[in-house]
Length: 474
Picture (cartoon, rainbow, N blue to C red):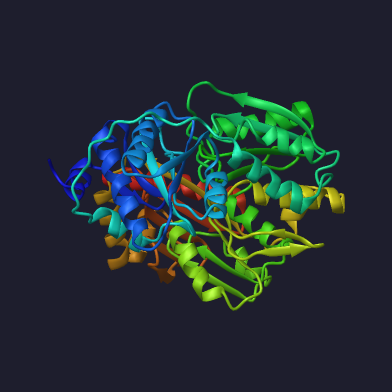
């Protein structure tokens, strides 16, 4: 029998920016067992625990993977707290309160023929060093044969009470909110929470088929849905998430979906956060707003944001967010004697409730809030089934001759004045246009981010750049 490291190496499953990801067919029982055993071995080095928490998203492949994960945990001598379908931040919150490790079976937004496993220590998301430990475990496999445990509801109640207790029973009073449910892992709990907090809720777009919602690249169909629903129902807000409920998708009263980094910026301002850690791909309105004492720019991926929190611990409050909308609260907050404990993993609910409750309190609209920000606009899209090797080759060409690359994108009236290589290739042009190219860490995709002073211009330039890249590679 091969050892754990050999099984993982041969599996084709890789760590990306958010857990181990790969094709469903590669998540065999043997591979799932190997990853689970290796994670447990890594946790034993630093933590004392007797139980492990597990939850899943609504992907058709997730139940089978979770069965192997749970039976492996039990066969290795630990008990399992199995929470069934649950948002990732709800699982992380409960496990951190219980000071135990946790495993989330989810591929987030990637297509349904793929899946993934996210690992959490008792303190939060695993680090890049933990990933190295998991990938290099040469211990032997064990025999696994046990029954999957019963589903518990403790984590759901803990997650909902977190917001009820901090924001108060009437914080969403009289708001009319649409919930775009699709196949989100949290779709069965959001309506209960918003109604309890005083809102009128209408459920939209529930799907029995898995829907890979990408909060960074909202589809034209979903953009049209947002406008149609707002026109039909006169919503104050529409709320949705990605597949595992850790990244929000929020539309204003006009049905316009907000960029995730704009959501994060508004949330951090309203929470009066002193310092931020954000990936390099986020909108420069963050610095231009002059709202924060320090802003650290990181590689893309929540582990890098969390790692940067170590440099911000001298501030009274610190947080992070990503261009995809996931908000990470690094420090504990206090308001009117109520405590909101830190949750250093991406969370979709916190930013939505912060924005929605402020709209109630100030009798304003979400579109007015965004108009008060520095007017920088980001657009992003991706080329799917684009080999990583092709992405890296393109980036190498851009580094060797950035002005020539810009000309190939038909941006001939500008020169490159700054090159940022924190993650991918981010070019700032003399025209104040920013073009950022980066291979996805989760799938064979090339992502493109464009930032300008006008949303229409950004949208058009993203299409123009990606179209040019397609022509170049063909």
